[in-house]
Amino acid sequence: MKLTVAQGTALSVGAVLGTGVISMPALAAGVAGPSSLVAWAALILLSAPLAWTFAALGARHPDGGGVSTYVRLAFGPRAAAAVGWCFYFAVPLGAPAAAAFAGNYVADVVGGGRRTVIATFLAIVGVVYVMNWFGLRISGRVQLWLTGTLATLLLVTVVTALPHARWANLTPFAPHGWAGIGAAAAVLVWGFAGWEAVSSLSPDYRDPRRDVPRATAVAVVVVGVLYLAVAATSVLVLGPALGDSQAPLADLLAVGVGGPVRTVTAVVAVLLTIGAVNAYLAGASRLGEALARDGALPRRVFGTQRRSLTFVLAASLAAVTLPVALKTSMLLVTGCFTLVYVLGTAAALRLLPAGASRRWAGVAFVAVLGLLVLTGPPALLSLVVAAGAIAYHAWRSRASAKIAIPSAISEGSTAPNPNTKPACEVA
Image (cartoon, rainbow, N blue to C red; front, side):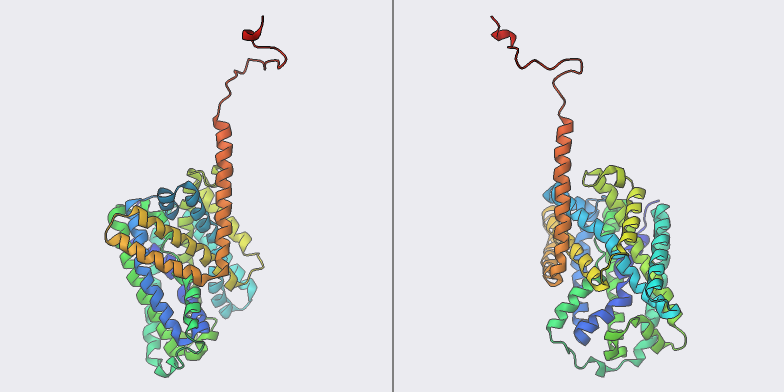
């Protein structure tokens, strides 16, 4: 069954909103204070041209390869393989980091620390794996229900907490200097990654040319309103304590409603994370299959959606055991995604027709270049992954060339004796 506009909107909102709304307000405030709201506003504005660019590409070129396909059409197979690898292999690295935010909320309720965080991660990826194993029909319907329910809960949290806002919490506005806004923007890239993920799902819409832009437009508005509302309310209500909060959404709900709300917010955090991980694994499973189809990954391991999905699950389980700090993991993942954005928007400048869509693509291209600079050294991981993709593509091309050239000697013939002269030279 094909995706409807409502289901596509839910997948888009889930991919972008996800873990950002339960964690980013505190992380951004920790490095920029109240001025983090400037970074929030800037990235919300960036979402419009970026999301529209990927929607326009998905509508004109519906394919499970998503950004990888667009880059292949614009710049060739090696560039496409590099982009595909950057996105595909960032997903299993990002899944444990995303689940860690929800795990902290659960640990806040039941205790257990690191063990609870890992158990929460295992439960989330297990549920998402099963949903996607049985196809997008189940995933789309579940995502629609999750997004509607969670948007309602977020609005309730904002409405009940906002009467406790204090304008005095906006001062000092930039306690860490104006450079803190740039640092906050680098952190917030994590919360706005996702617009490229659902482009891999474009062929699953009933009418991609009509439905992809509609779903994306609605998603941009929903995400922007919810993000800015939660971020602003967090700053105005929690004040300086926001930067040190491990569960800012729980703190907001406690102020607005009172009583034992920690359990409620833990459930909210888990559901939001399921929505985000669901959208990413759905897109990644399609991308892995498309990359194998195009020769950028081995068919035996990645050749079907279920094989690709299983690899992402296995890689995620391996990533959770790595001795890497949460913030480091976030920056490594956002570095890979930012490079995907740079090459994806550059491809849009070549593929989209002259007019409004190409102009929006130009704005998005300049903006993501700036984000790449703000990401800093962690973005170097994307270059390593891209180099691996190019090396694999080159090796496979050489191997295919050797296999493709048939021998001119039949199986029954014998090799000539090098000491025997050709017949034309005898006598």
